[in-house]
Amino acid sequence: MILEAETRCMPQKSCDAVPGPLINSGNQFEKAAIGEGSLPSHSGDLLRKQGAGRPGIGGQRDRTVKARIFDRFNSALERWLPERRVFLRTDTETRFVRLTPATQLAAISGIGLFIVWSVIATAFLLVDSIGSGNLREQARREQLAYEARLNTLSAERDSRAQEAAAAHARFAQALERISQMQTTILALEDRRAELEQGIEIIQATLRETMQERDKARALAREAEARLASSTMTVRSELDRAREVEGAVDFLTSALTTTALERDEVAARARRARQMVDELVLETRLIQERNDRIFQQLEDAVTISLTPLDKMFRNAGLPTEHILETIRKGYSGQGGPLTPLSFSTMGARSTPDPDTLRANAILSQLDRMNMYRIAAQKTPFVLPIRNAFRFTSGYGYRSDPKTGGRRLHKGTDFAAAHGTPIYATADGVVVHAGWSSGYGRLVKIRHAFGIETRYAHMAKIRVKVGDRVSRGDRIGDMGSSGRSTGTHLHYEIRVNGEPVNAMKFIKAAQDVL
Image 1 (cartoon, rainbow, N blue to C red):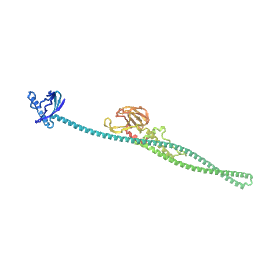
Image 2: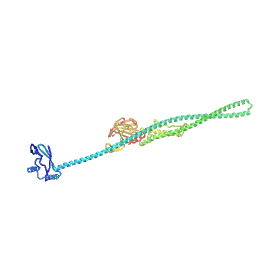
Image 3: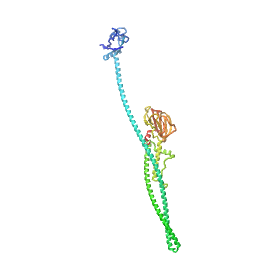
Image 4: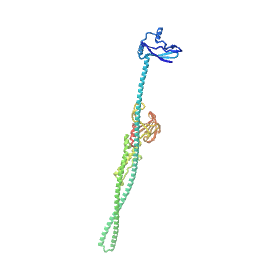
Protein backbone atom coordinates (compact mmCIF):
# COMPACT_ATOMS: atom_id res chain seq x y z
CA MET A 1 0.00 0.00 0.00
CA ILE A 2 1.35 3.44 -0.95
CA LEU A 3 0.27 6.58 0.95
CA GLU A 4 0.37 9.87 -0.95
CA ALA A 5 -1.13 13.35 -0.46
CA GLU A 6 -1.27 16.17 -3.00
CA THR A 7 -3.19 19.48 -2.88
CA ARG A 8 -3.83 22.21 -5.49
CA CYS A 9 -5.72 25.44 -4.86
CA MET A 10 -7.88 26.84 -7.68
CA PRO A 11 -8.50 30.54 -8.25
CA GLN A 12 -12.04 30.14 -6.94
CA LYS A 13 -10.46 29.22 -3.48
CA SER A 14 -11.52 25.64 -3.82
CA CYS A 15 -8.97 22.91 -3.67
CA ASP A 16 -9.24 19.82 -5.87
CA ALA A 17 -6.96 16.90 -5.99
CA VAL A 18 -4.76 16.49 -9.10
CA PRO A 19 -5.09 13.35 -11.09
CA GLY A 20 -4.26 10.38 -8.88
CA PRO A 21 -1.19 8.26 -9.30
CA LEU A 22 -1.03 5.74 -12.06
CA ILE A 23 -0.40 2.08 -11.61
CA ASN A 24 2.34 0.81 -13.85
CA SER A 25 1.32 -2.49 -15.37
CA GLY A 26 4.11 -3.55 -17.66
CA ASN A 27 4.84 -0.88 -20.30
CA GLN A 28 1.39 0.51 -20.26
CA PHE A 29 -0.13 2.89 -17.79
CA GLU A 30 -3.59 2.18 -16.57
CA LYS A 31 -5.67 4.20 -14.23
CA ALA A 32 -6.37 2.76 -10.82
CA ALA A 33 -9.59 0.95 -10.37
CA ILE A 34 -12.06 3.04 -8.47
CA GLY A 35 -14.22 1.44 -5.79
CA GLU A 36 -16.73 2.94 -3.36
CA GLY A 37 -15.23 6.03 -1.71
CA SER A 38 -12.13 5.96 -4.01
CA LEU A 39 -10.86 8.77 -6.31
CA PRO A 40 -10.95 8.35 -10.16
CA SER A 41 -7.98 9.35 -12.21
CA HIS A 42 -9.82 12.32 -13.74
CA SER A 43 -9.83 15.74 -12.10
CA GLY A 44 -12.34 16.74 -9.45
CA ASP A 45 -14.07 19.20 -11.79
CA LEU A 46 -14.77 16.48 -14.31
CA LEU A 47 -16.17 14.31 -11.57
CA ARG A 48 -18.50 17.04 -10.41
CA LYS A 49 -19.63 17.76 -14.01
CA GLN A 50 -20.38 14.13 -14.62
CA GLY A 51 -22.32 13.93 -11.40
CA ALA A 52 -24.27 17.06 -12.28
CA GLY A 53 -25.13 15.75 -15.72
CA ARG A 54 -26.56 12.55 -14.44
CA PRO A 55 -30.08 12.39 -13.13
CA GLY A 56 -30.19 11.71 -9.36
CA ILE A 57 -26.46 12.54 -8.80
CA GLY A 58 -25.70 15.94 -7.40
CA GLY A 59 -28.76 15.78 -5.21
CA GLN A 60 -30.31 19.10 -4.55
CA ARG A 61 -28.75 22.16 -6.11
CA ASP A 62 -29.74 24.47 -3.35
CA ARG A 63 -27.69 23.84 -0.26
CA THR A 64 -29.14 24.29 3.12
CA VAL A 65 -28.14 27.25 5.25
CA LYS A 66 -26.07 25.03 7.47
CA ALA A 67 -24.13 23.58 4.55
CA ARG A 68 -23.43 27.09 3.19
CA ILE A 69 -22.14 28.28 6.50
CA PHE A 70 -19.89 25.23 6.73
CA ASP A 71 -18.62 25.79 3.18
CA ARG A 72 -17.90 29.45 3.89
CA PHE A 73 -16.06 28.49 7.03
CA ASN A 74 -13.97 26.00 5.09
CA SER A 75 -13.33 28.60 2.39
CA ALA A 76 -12.11 31.08 4.99
CA LEU A 77 -9.77 28.47 6.46
CA GLU A 78 -8.38 27.32 3.09
CA ARG A 79 -6.02 30.30 3.02
CA TRP A 80 -4.08 28.91 5.94
CA LEU A 81 -5.26 25.32 5.97
CA PRO A 82 -5.88 24.17 2.38
CA GLU A 83 -7.82 20.98 1.89
CA ARG A 84 -5.66 17.89 1.85
CA ARG A 85 -6.25 14.40 0.65
CA VAL A 86 -4.38 11.38 1.90
CA PHE A 87 -4.05 8.72 -0.76
CA LEU A 88 -3.85 5.03 0.04
CA ARG A 89 -2.46 3.16 -2.96
CA THR A 90 -2.20 -0.58 -3.45
CA ASP A 91 -1.28 -2.66 -6.46
CA THR A 92 -4.86 -2.79 -7.66
CA GLU A 93 -6.55 0.36 -6.45
CA THR A 94 -6.09 3.79 -4.90
CA ARG A 95 -8.18 5.24 -2.07
CA PHE A 96 -8.03 8.64 -0.37
CA VAL A 97 -9.07 10.31 2.82
CA ARG A 98 -10.25 13.90 2.53
CA LEU A 99 -9.05 16.34 5.22
CA THR A 100 -11.15 19.46 5.16
CA PRO A 101 -9.88 22.72 6.75
CA ALA A 102 -12.38 22.25 9.62
CA THR A 103 -11.05 18.75 10.25
CA GLN A 104 -7.46 20.03 10.22
CA LEU A 105 -8.41 22.88 12.59
CA ALA A 106 -10.08 20.41 14.97
CA ALA A 107 -7.02 18.13 14.88
CA ILE A 108 -4.60 21.03 15.45
CA SER A 109 -6.81 22.39 18.28
CA GLY A 110 -6.94 18.95 19.93
CA ILE A 111 -3.16 18.57 19.65
CA GLY A 112 -2.69 22.11 21.04
CA LEU A 113 -5.08 21.46 23.93
CA PHE A 114 -3.27 18.20 24.68
CA ILE A 115 0.11 19.98 24.69
CA VAL A 116 -1.23 22.76 26.97
CA TRP A 117 -2.80 20.16 29.30
CA SER A 118 0.48 18.21 29.37
CA VAL A 119 2.47 21.35 30.27
CA ILE A 120 0.01 22.33 33.05
CA ALA A 121 -0.14 18.78 34.46
CA THR A 122 3.66 18.54 34.40
CA ALA A 123 3.91 21.88 36.23
CA PHE A 124 1.43 20.71 38.90
CA LEU A 125 3.34 17.44 39.32
CA LEU A 126 6.61 19.34 39.74
CA VAL A 127 5.04 21.70 42.30
CA ASP A 128 3.53 18.76 44.22
CA SER A 129 6.84 16.90 44.11
CA ILE A 130 8.76 19.91 45.44
CA GLY A 131 6.11 20.55 48.14
CA SER A 132 6.04 16.89 49.24
CA GLY A 133 9.84 16.90 49.39
CA ASN A 134 9.78 19.94 51.69
CA LEU A 135 7.09 18.33 53.89
CA ARG A 136 9.11 15.13 54.17
CA GLU A 137 12.23 17.09 55.06
CA GLN A 138 10.30 19.10 57.65
CA ALA A 139 8.78 15.91 59.11
CA ARG A 140 12.24 14.34 59.23
CA ARG A 141 13.64 17.38 61.05
CA GLU A 142 10.74 17.33 63.54
CA GLN A 143 11.25 13.60 64.08
CA LEU A 144 14.97 14.12 64.73
CA ALA A 145 14.19 16.95 67.16
CA TYR A 146 11.57 14.81 68.91
CA GLU A 147 14.00 11.89 69.19
CA ALA A 148 16.68 14.23 70.55
CA ARG A 149 14.19 15.53 73.12
CA LEU A 150 13.26 11.96 74.07
CA ASN A 151 16.95 11.10 74.48
CA THR A 152 17.41 14.18 76.69
CA LEU A 153 14.38 13.25 78.80
CA SER A 154 15.67 9.68 79.09
CA ALA A 155 19.06 10.95 80.27
CA GLU A 156 17.37 13.26 82.79
CA ARG A 157 15.21 10.36 83.99
CA ASP A 158 18.33 8.19 84.46
CA SER A 159 20.11 10.98 86.36
CA ARG A 160 17.05 11.49 88.57
CA ALA A 161 16.94 7.73 89.19
CA GLN A 162 20.61 7.79 90.21
CA GLU A 163 19.95 10.74 92.51
CA ALA A 164 16.98 8.90 94.02
CA ALA A 165 19.14 5.81 94.57
CA ALA A 166 21.79 7.97 96.22
CA ALA A 167 19.11 9.56 98.42
CA HIS A 168 17.86 6.11 99.42
CA ALA A 169 21.43 5.09 100.22
CA ARG A 170 21.91 8.22 102.33
CA PHE A 171 18.61 7.51 104.08
CA ALA A 172 19.71 3.94 104.85
CA GLN A 173 23.03 5.22 106.18
CA ALA A 174 21.18 7.74 108.34
CA LEU A 175 18.95 5.02 109.76
CA GLU A 176 22.00 2.86 110.47
CA ARG A 177 23.69 5.77 112.22
CA ILE A 178 20.51 6.40 114.21
CA SER A 179 20.53 2.77 115.34
CA GLN A 180 24.20 2.98 116.32
CA MET A 181 23.64 6.25 118.16
CA GLN A 182 20.65 4.79 120.01
CA THR A 183 22.84 1.87 121.11
CA THR A 184 25.58 4.28 122.24
CA ILE A 185 23.07 6.46 124.10
CA LEU A 186 21.67 3.42 125.94
CA ALA A 187 25.18 2.28 126.89
CA LEU A 188 26.06 5.77 128.13
CA GLU A 189 22.80 5.83 130.07
CA ASP A 190 23.74 2.57 131.80
CA ARG A 191 27.21 3.92 132.59
CA ARG A 192 25.71 7.11 133.97
CA ALA A 193 23.32 5.14 136.17
CA GLU A 194 26.23 3.09 137.52
CA LEU A 195 28.25 6.24 138.27
CA GLU A 196 25.31 7.89 140.02
CA GLN A 197 24.79 4.75 142.12
CA GLY A 198 28.51 4.78 143.06
CA ILE A 199 28.29 8.45 144.03
CA GLU A 200 25.25 7.72 146.20
CA ILE A 201 27.13 4.88 147.97
CA ILE A 202 30.14 7.12 148.54
CA GLN A 203 27.94 9.89 149.91
CA ALA A 204 26.17 7.43 152.27
CA THR A 205 29.54 6.12 153.52
CA LEU A 206 30.78 9.68 154.02
CA ARG A 207 27.69 10.56 156.03
CA GLU A 208 28.10 7.50 158.26
CA THR A 209 31.78 8.30 158.83
CA MET A 210 31.00 11.88 159.79
CA GLN A 211 28.30 10.71 162.23
CA GLU A 212 30.78 8.31 163.85
CA ARG A 213 33.32 11.12 164.04
CA ASP A 214 30.78 13.38 165.77
CA LYS A 215 29.92 10.59 168.25
CA ALA A 216 33.60 10.04 169.01
CA ARG A 217 34.10 13.74 169.65
CA ALA A 218 31.11 13.78 172.00
CA LEU A 219 32.50 10.80 173.89
CA ALA A 220 35.88 12.48 174.13
CA ARG A 221 34.37 15.66 175.56
CA GLU A 222 32.29 13.64 178.00
CA ALA A 223 35.36 11.67 179.05
CA GLU A 224 37.37 14.85 179.55
CA ALA A 225 34.60 16.31 181.69
CA ARG A 226 34.35 13.17 183.71
CA LEU A 227 38.11 13.08 184.05
CA ALA A 228 38.23 16.65 185.36
CA SER A 229 35.47 16.00 187.88
CA SER A 230 37.16 12.75 188.93
CA THR A 231 40.50 14.53 189.43
CA MET A 232 38.95 17.17 191.71
CA THR A 233 36.68 14.87 193.74
CA VAL A 234 38.01 11.29 193.73
CA ARG A 235 41.84 11.52 193.72
CA SER A 236 42.05 9.16 196.57
CA GLU A 237 40.18 6.40 194.93
CA LEU A 238 42.66 4.28 192.98
CA ASP A 239 40.07 2.04 191.42
CA ARG A 240 38.26 5.01 190.01
CA ALA A 241 41.55 6.31 188.74
CA ARG A 242 42.24 3.04 186.99
CA GLU A 243 38.84 3.19 185.34
CA VAL A 244 39.48 6.73 184.24
CA GLU A 245 42.88 5.74 182.91
CA GLY A 246 41.32 2.86 181.03
CA ALA A 247 38.65 5.17 179.65
CA VAL A 248 41.30 7.65 178.59
CA ASP A 249 43.25 4.90 176.83
CA PHE A 250 40.06 3.80 175.09
CA LEU A 251 39.23 7.35 174.10
CA THR A 252 42.75 7.92 172.83
CA SER A 253 42.62 4.83 170.67
CA ALA A 254 39.13 5.77 169.51
CA LEU A 255 40.29 9.28 168.64
CA THR A 256 43.27 7.85 166.77
CA THR A 257 41.00 5.49 164.83
CA THR A 258 38.56 8.31 164.21
CA ALA A 259 41.34 10.55 162.89
CA LEU A 260 42.53 7.82 160.52
CA GLU A 261 38.97 7.24 159.32
CA ARG A 262 38.51 10.97 158.90
CA ASP A 263 41.62 11.18 156.74
CA GLU A 264 40.40 8.23 154.70
CA VAL A 265 36.93 9.79 154.34
CA ALA A 266 38.53 13.05 153.26
CA ALA A 267 40.60 11.21 150.65
CA ARG A 268 37.45 9.44 149.49
CA ALA A 269 35.62 12.75 149.30
CA ARG A 270 38.44 14.24 147.22
CA ARG A 271 38.34 11.27 144.88
CA ALA A 272 34.54 11.52 144.73
CA ARG A 273 34.71 15.21 143.85
CA GLN A 274 37.28 14.40 141.15
CA MET A 275 35.03 11.67 139.76
CA VAL A 276 32.09 14.07 139.86
CA ASP A 277 34.11 16.63 137.89
CA GLU A 278 35.07 13.96 135.36
CA LEU A 279 31.44 12.87 135.10
CA VAL A 280 30.33 16.46 134.59
CA LEU A 281 32.94 16.90 131.82
CA GLU A 282 31.99 13.60 130.22
CA THR A 283 28.31 14.54 130.46
CA ARG A 284 29.03 17.87 128.77
CA LEU A 285 30.96 16.12 125.97
CA ILE A 286 28.13 13.61 125.55
CA GLN A 287 25.66 16.49 125.40
CA GLU A 288 27.69 18.27 122.71
CA ARG A 289 28.01 15.05 120.73
CA ASN A 290 24.28 14.42 121.10
CA ASP A 291 23.61 17.95 119.83
CA ARG A 292 25.72 17.25 116.73
CA ILE A 293 24.00 13.91 116.20
CA PHE A 294 20.57 15.48 116.64
CA GLN A 295 21.48 18.24 114.17
CA GLN A 296 22.66 15.72 111.56
CA LEU A 297 19.54 13.64 112.10
CA GLU A 298 17.27 16.67 111.79
CA ASP A 299 19.03 17.74 108.56
CA ALA A 300 18.84 14.21 107.09
CA VAL A 301 15.18 13.82 107.99
CA THR A 302 14.32 17.24 106.57
CA ILE A 303 16.19 16.52 103.31
CA SER A 304 14.45 13.15 102.95
CA LEU A 305 10.98 14.26 104.07
CA THR A 306 10.63 17.45 101.99
CA PRO A 307 10.76 15.71 98.53
CA LEU A 308 8.17 13.14 99.65
CA ASP A 309 5.79 15.84 100.84
CA LYS A 310 6.36 17.83 97.64
CA MET A 311 5.74 14.71 95.51
CA PHE A 312 2.25 14.17 96.98
CA ARG A 313 1.38 17.87 96.79
CA ASN A 314 2.48 18.14 93.13
CA ALA A 315 0.25 15.16 92.34
CA GLY A 316 -2.70 17.08 93.85
CA LEU A 317 -3.26 14.67 96.75
CA PRO A 318 -4.26 15.76 100.30
CA THR A 319 -1.16 14.82 102.29
CA GLU A 320 -2.62 15.16 105.79
CA HIS A 321 -5.66 13.04 104.90
CA ILE A 322 -3.40 10.37 103.38
CA LEU A 323 -1.12 10.30 106.44
CA GLU A 324 -4.11 10.09 108.78
CA THR A 325 -5.47 7.16 106.74
CA ILE A 326 -2.11 5.37 106.94
CA ARG A 327 -1.86 6.08 110.67
CA LYS A 328 -5.30 4.57 111.33
CA GLY A 329 -4.79 1.61 109.04
CA TYR A 330 -1.40 0.66 110.50
CA SER A 331 -1.98 1.48 114.19
CA GLY A 332 -2.45 -2.19 115.06
CA GLN A 333 0.73 -3.31 113.31
CA GLY A 334 3.42 -1.30 115.04
CA GLY A 335 2.60 2.29 114.18
CA PRO A 336 4.94 5.14 115.08
CA LEU A 337 8.27 4.57 116.88
CA THR A 338 8.24 4.85 120.71
CA PRO A 339 9.93 8.11 121.83
CA LEU A 340 13.19 7.79 123.77
CA SER A 341 13.63 9.13 127.33
CA PHE A 342 17.11 10.06 128.62
CA SER A 343 16.16 10.85 132.25
CA THR A 344 17.75 8.75 135.08
CA MET A 345 16.21 10.66 137.95
CA GLY A 346 12.84 8.96 137.84
CA ALA A 347 9.62 10.23 136.30
CA ARG A 348 9.38 13.95 135.72
CA SER A 349 6.38 16.09 135.06
CA THR A 350 8.17 18.08 132.29
CA PRO A 351 10.45 16.28 129.73
CA ASP A 352 13.94 17.67 129.25
CA PRO A 353 14.98 19.36 125.96
CA ASP A 354 16.84 16.29 124.67
CA THR A 355 13.76 14.13 125.11
CA LEU A 356 11.60 16.66 123.27
CA ARG A 357 14.16 16.89 120.46
CA ALA A 358 14.44 13.12 120.14
CA ASN A 359 10.65 12.78 120.11
CA ALA A 360 10.43 15.38 117.32
CA ILE A 361 12.98 13.44 115.22
CA LEU A 362 11.15 10.18 115.83
CA SER A 363 7.89 11.85 114.84
CA GLN A 364 9.44 13.00 111.56
CA LEU A 365 10.86 9.51 110.96
CA ASP A 366 7.40 8.09 111.56
CA ARG A 367 5.95 10.60 109.07
CA MET A 368 8.61 9.57 106.53
CA ASN A 369 7.74 5.91 107.05
CA MET A 370 4.04 6.67 106.49
CA TYR A 371 4.95 8.59 103.30
CA ARG A 372 6.89 5.52 102.15
CA ILE A 373 3.85 3.29 102.72
CA ALA A 374 1.56 5.79 100.96
CA ALA A 375 3.97 6.07 97.99
CA GLN A 376 3.86 2.29 97.60
CA LYS A 377 0.05 2.47 97.33
CA THR A 378 -0.01 5.45 94.92
CA PRO A 379 0.67 5.11 91.13
CA PHE A 380 3.79 7.27 90.82
CA VAL A 381 5.76 5.10 88.36
CA LEU A 382 5.50 4.26 84.65
CA PRO A 383 3.54 1.13 83.66
CA ILE A 384 6.18 0.24 81.03
CA ARG A 385 9.87 -0.52 81.56
CA ASN A 386 10.88 -1.20 77.94
CA ALA A 387 11.57 1.45 75.30
CA PHE A 388 8.37 3.24 74.27
CA ARG A 389 7.04 6.30 72.44
CA PHE A 390 4.67 8.85 73.99
CA THR A 391 1.91 9.18 71.36
CA SER A 392 -0.98 11.02 73.02
CA GLY A 393 -1.46 12.90 76.28
CA TYR A 394 -4.37 13.79 78.53
CA GLY A 395 -6.80 16.46 77.29
CA TYR A 396 -8.77 17.45 74.22
CA ARG A 397 -7.45 16.14 70.89
CA SER A 398 -8.52 15.27 67.36
CA ASP A 399 -10.12 11.82 67.49
CA PRO A 400 -7.90 9.33 65.53
CA LYS A 401 -10.99 7.58 64.14
CA THR A 402 -13.52 10.33 63.40
CA GLY A 403 -11.33 13.44 63.45
CA GLY A 404 -13.67 15.27 65.84
CA ARG A 405 -12.48 17.13 68.95
CA ARG A 406 -12.87 14.86 72.00
CA LEU A 407 -11.51 14.61 75.55
CA HIS A 408 -8.78 11.99 75.88
CA LYS A 409 -8.99 10.78 79.50
CA GLY A 410 -5.69 8.89 79.57
CA THR A 411 -2.12 8.77 78.30
CA ASP A 412 -0.97 6.59 75.36
CA PHE A 413 2.38 4.77 75.27
CA ALA A 414 3.32 2.96 72.04
CA ALA A 415 5.80 0.06 72.00
CA ALA A 416 6.30 -3.35 70.40
CA HIS A 417 3.46 -5.87 70.40
CA GLY A 418 3.59 -8.01 73.57
CA THR A 419 5.58 -5.48 75.65
CA PRO A 420 5.09 -6.30 79.38
CA ILE A 421 2.74 -4.01 81.32
CA TYR A 422 3.23 -3.63 85.08
CA ALA A 423 1.04 -2.42 87.95
CA THR A 424 2.05 1.08 89.07
CA ALA A 425 1.01 0.66 92.73
CA ASP A 426 -0.30 -1.87 95.24
CA GLY A 427 -4.00 -2.65 94.88
CA VAL A 428 -6.78 -5.14 94.05
CA VAL A 429 -7.91 -6.11 90.53
CA VAL A 430 -11.60 -5.18 90.16
CA HIS A 431 -11.98 -5.79 86.40
CA ALA A 432 -10.08 -8.03 83.97
CA GLY A 433 -11.76 -8.59 80.61
CA TRP A 434 -13.32 -7.00 77.53
CA SER A 435 -14.86 -3.51 77.79
CA SER A 436 -16.22 -2.06 74.49
CA GLY A 437 -13.86 0.68 73.24
CA TYR A 438 -11.17 -0.18 75.82
CA GLY A 439 -10.73 -3.69 74.41
CA ARG A 440 -8.99 -5.97 76.91
CA LEU A 441 -9.03 -3.87 80.06
CA VAL A 442 -7.61 -4.25 83.59
CA LYS A 443 -8.81 -2.02 86.45
CA ILE A 444 -6.90 -1.89 89.75
CA ARG A 445 -8.34 -0.21 92.85
CA HIS A 446 -5.70 1.44 95.06
CA ALA A 447 -5.88 3.25 98.38
CA PHE A 448 -7.12 6.85 98.85
CA GLY A 449 -9.88 6.47 96.21
CA ILE A 450 -7.44 5.99 93.31
CA GLU A 451 -8.07 3.63 90.38
CA THR A 452 -5.79 2.84 87.41
CA ARG A 453 -6.88 1.46 84.02
CA TYR A 454 -4.77 -0.41 81.44
CA ALA A 455 -6.54 -0.75 78.06
CA HIS A 456 -6.08 -2.28 74.55
CA MET A 457 -4.08 -5.26 75.90
CA ALA A 458 -3.19 -8.27 73.77
CA LYS A 459 -3.21 -10.60 76.80
CA ILE A 460 -4.41 -10.27 80.42
CA ARG A 461 -2.33 -12.04 83.10
CA VAL A 462 -4.46 -11.35 86.22
CA LYS A 463 -8.03 -12.03 87.30
CA VAL A 464 -10.61 -10.20 89.39
CA GLY A 465 -9.82 -10.29 93.11
CA ASP A 466 -6.04 -10.67 92.72
CA ARG A 467 -3.89 -8.52 94.99
CA VAL A 468 -1.01 -6.99 93.05
CA SER A 469 2.03 -5.05 94.13
CA ARG A 470 3.93 -2.34 92.34
CA GLY A 471 5.98 -3.93 89.55
CA ASP A 472 3.80 -7.06 89.12
CA ARG A 473 3.18 -7.96 85.47
CA ILE A 474 -0.54 -7.71 84.67
CA GLY A 475 -0.63 -8.09 80.87
CA ASP A 476 0.93 -7.57 77.41
CA MET A 477 0.60 -4.57 75.10
CA GLY A 478 -1.69 -4.95 72.09
CA SER A 479 -4.27 -3.17 69.91
CA SER A 480 -7.65 -4.56 71.00
CA GLY A 481 -10.80 -2.45 71.07
CA ARG A 482 -11.05 0.99 69.46
CA SER A 483 -7.40 1.44 68.49
CA THR A 484 -5.32 2.44 65.47
CA GLY A 485 -2.21 0.46 66.47
CA THR A 486 -0.30 -1.29 69.24
CA HIS A 487 -0.20 0.91 72.36
CA LEU A 488 -1.23 1.13 76.04
CA HIS A 489 -3.98 3.50 77.14
CA TYR A 490 -3.04 4.29 80.79
CA GLU A 491 -5.64 6.10 82.87
CA ILE A 492 -5.76 7.32 86.51
CA ARG A 493 -9.04 8.19 88.26
CA VAL A 494 -9.34 9.82 91.69
CA ASN A 495 -12.76 9.35 93.31
CA GLY A 496 -14.12 8.34 89.90
CA GLU A 497 -12.87 11.44 88.04
CA PRO A 498 -10.09 11.09 85.40
CA VAL A 499 -6.89 13.05 86.05
CA ASN A 500 -3.67 13.59 84.12
CA ALA A 501 -1.43 10.56 84.78
CA MET A 502 1.69 12.55 83.89
CA LYS A 503 1.19 14.69 87.03
CA PHE A 504 1.85 11.60 89.17
CA ILE A 505 4.77 10.41 87.02
CA LYS A 506 6.47 13.84 86.88
CA ALA A 507 5.92 14.43 90.62
CA ALA A 508 7.94 11.29 91.43
CA GLN A 509 10.79 11.82 88.92
CA ASP A 510 13.15 13.35 91.50
CA VAL A 511 12.10 11.08 94.39
CA LEU A 512 11.44 7.49 93.30
